[in-house]
View 1 (tube, one colour):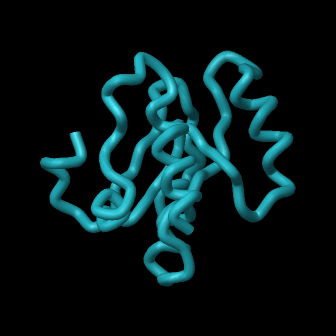
View 2 (cartoon, rainbow, N blue to C red):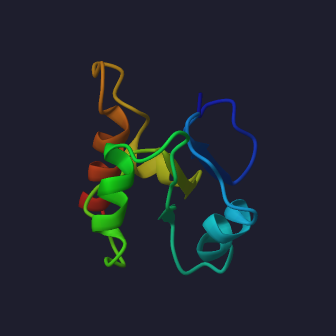
View 3 (cartoon, rainbow, N blue to C red):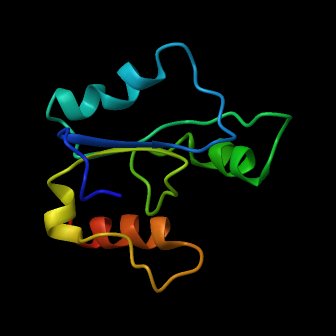
Length: 106
């Protein structure tokens, strides 16, 4: 899926996320300002609290995360050259593995 992307920023949002009005601007602002390479956004699920919403509340106090699913995330396309693609051997969690590898590389 990354291989055909033409832009400089890759963005994911999960199907059950409810984006805020300016979510895309806010999510990509630190990347466009050249202060960050990867940004994970906050989420709100359709139909009430899920495990992701509870985890979101716990992580809101942190500036930097150790891991992040691609529920709502943006990153520079060039990150793929350093980190690689999602590991297709995983049935689940390849997104978190991707962010672990990115974190390990700084």
